[in-house]
Length: 410
Ligand SMILES: [Zn+2]
Image (cartoon, rainbow, N blue to C red; front, side, top):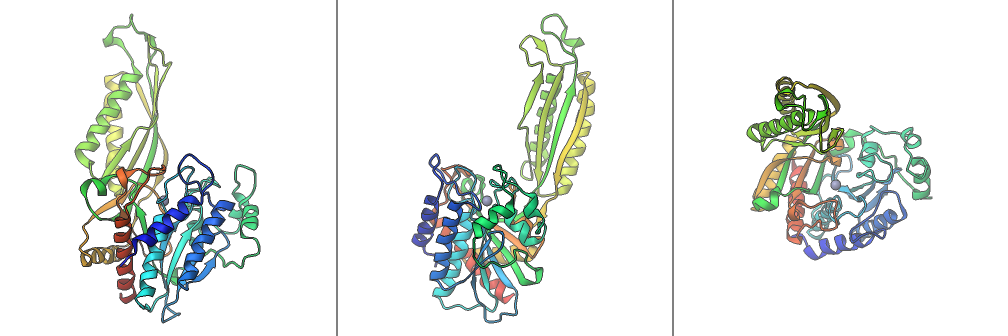
């Protein structure tokens, strides 16, 4: 059984290893504060007899050796860094629960055939070098030696310089992991959304890390006096923008309420004056779904509606695709093992997508990877009030523990 007081001790100790901030945790990758966090983690790993390894970009492993060293490892973990003034669970929960799962293996004298590695990745949040998922991108080989000279922090120091300072004289291994060295990667994370708590479900099985489409839409109309241009003769870009956003929002609620999200995070009018008809309306669209086909369908709808509304409002629509990230589907066999573990433990679960990026999406390029979510208080994250109950931390740990054993036998 997972020990809630040990989970609490690890989380609370790490919560206090922070730069001074406004009630939250600030432990940015590859800083002196981060080093303190890593040293605490290594100490816990050492206490249960794990072999500790650090790589040349600051990822940390605690390894419980398996019976057969020729077999690839089962790796579980998440990131140990935070954004500024963050909560204590984002990322950290995945490291602490993986460590606790290994503690239970040790306590019960269970030696698996495969080695189990607890992994704490570095700079997942990208706060120090402006590049998210930094540690795992070096593990996957997406980043290599030359990227250490390409990436700079805002003080003008290269990643290589910062690493030289951060690692000192420690003996480190190369960050890159050959795919054949890892059997599977399991990442526990808090949900960072409200669904599990609101529906009173213990575990979220992540099917996909969503595809993200970002667009900027610019609508051009014609400016005019608010009092003198009759309604029927207007080319109001603001009205066109509002109609468009309303229609698109209704479409997604009607067709894809559970499978896609739409966010209009920026919306601006020109000349932005109370007595002037807007001649320009510009806004962003952030559309996410675990299914690339749904994004294609929404894209079709966007172009259709743009044509209709530009006619209706006598305006011109310009649709500009800013970025597209493909969805990353989690490994089906691993998801099944996690589901079996939930059933074995009598825990309720539901399938869901992750609307946020995680190390698992990078690790999926290296080895079979899967994620499980534990409920978090009101979905609050990147905020000091982020909270996961100790009971839910323990449930998540036990799912990891059983999944490690099942994986070993699979
Ligand atoms: Zn995270």
